[in-house]
Image 1 (cartoon, protein in one colour):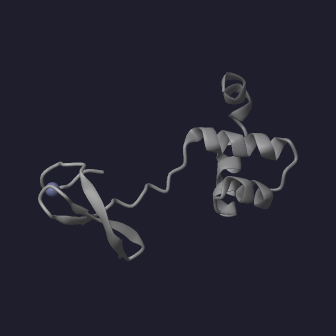
Image 2 (tube, rainbow, N blue to C red):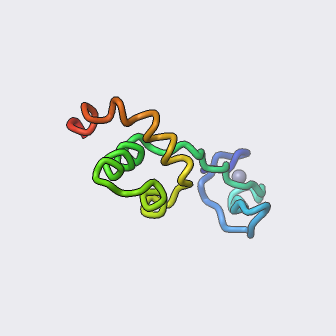
Length: 91
Ligand SMILES: [Zn+2]
């Protein structure tokens, strides 16, 4: 994340705003917050969840291990379980 104004990456932390880290650019003094991270998880994590599920772990246990919402795990398994075996071999 760089300064939106001058594109400098030289910055210092300047507290939090609404749970997001705020920075102040050392170059131009502009204050900005970092973009919220995308909530989309990498495919590796999803496939790992499916693999754990196939190893007999419960969805809540998987969610705890991967530190994600168990509803997400449920969705991944629903979506990926039918296609996972081929992908797991490649992974
Ligand atoms: Zn700047």
